[in-house]
Length: 206
Length: 206
DNA sequence: CCGGGCATCCACCGATCGGTGGATGCCGGG
DNA sequence: CCCGGCATCCACCGATCGGTGGATGCCCGG
Image 1 (cartoon, rainbow over the protein chains, first blue to last red):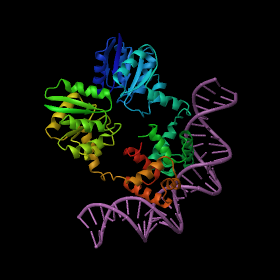
Image 2: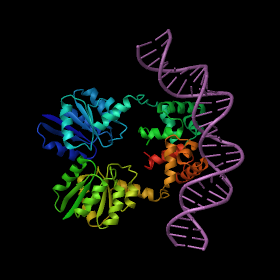
Image 3: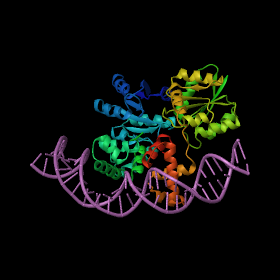
Image 4: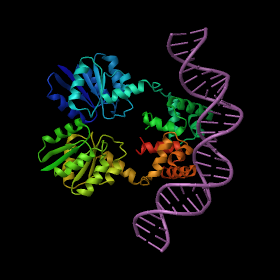
């Protein structure tokens, strides 16, 4: 019997998932949780085998929860189940140790197969995610911004000139420019407007 | 008997909703649809009273579907049911004639009350949406961009200089600058980077 | 102990941008 | 029929930005 934990902040999604598994032989929904923190607690307490985890949740997001679970209970498999095809957390989730990645618009039987596959230790990727993964992996590996660079980018997105950003961060205008140039490099763009755009697309801004 | 149509591109969400209503006396789930186009067809064919409509869907989005339904079948009530609190289509949906607006993380009983209220002709707003509505309404009324302005903004977001944008649109650089100045006005910003940022925040870019 | 990543600073230059103050033609609503 | 919104174009100027090619000090990890 595969013991399952559903972690999602939307009651409706939880209900839908529970309904999908309820009738299924060999799979048992052991419990639910509405955020990452609850998810970690219950995954341990209920001794589950598989966790179905949403990424965007209050309290503690999915990626953090996956990281924590991986440390404390490395035998528990985590299947990420998210709404967004364009979700910017796809890669972080996999890096954090997710066993698989599914989109919520997957048909129910694909869900069931995925859970069984994950229980057997196989990695699971929905086709669209697999495609994105391959595309991203051959890319420069999504250079992450440093804290400082993100601060600068945020200020620029809010309309600050280099001078104003410098004033807010108590550093010189020259440093702002350097940070921006580094950001341009990492993003593969040539000006602040495109950098802001890329920042949103990568989920670094909002 | 209230006849209901569920329109959402995620089978799991449809299942969850169907399960929530199945047991409910006086409410009958007459059918489901996976996108706006199907939704319009089935709403008419199945003679439903209420449509539960997601906004983000392939083929035809929710706002377009609501607009079309409002024209062809004004007596059918549409309840928007979306995942995102920060969804930028909240206002367009209401302008398009949605009877109500709910977030999918609403508890099941709130859903039921909402459907009954909508059937009775009452407008339905989940508290968080009501708050945002009020906040927005007192704001400058979200000046919409013209088609041309949006084209320019999109190009700028992709890193185009004024000159490059001009070349792509077969107009002069001066016109690009004029369009940008109009955009700055409407957005209340002073430079292209902030305009791009605002474009994303308002859901005009992605 | 030394290399490398990070944050910080500097100067100089050409290119671009934003601001101002116009003008024209088209179209649709009052 | 005229006004207003929209798209288009023009010129000019100062401010800002992006590019280049450096430099320093810090701290972490091999």
